[in-house]
Image (spheres, rainbow, N blue to C red):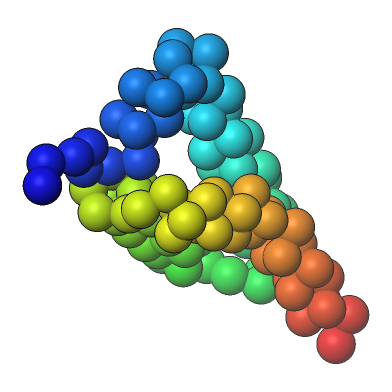
Length: 100
């Protein structure tokens, strides 16, 4: 059975240009918000530059590769939720570390 391999293609086919733009906007906003939170943590001495780069690229590239090649719609939705909540999760944990 042949089908679409990759969530980005599925979103484009099922939702059109507007859908893919909205989908990619979520990824973009999460990336920028995660960078802001991570740079703030680096400025406060909670992480160093290598940890910041590893955090950003290991999570986003891994998820993007998986969603782009193998993920089904349910798994992709869960990853989208995780990606969108990631900046808030990091901000919460960095603030807890900073208080201690």
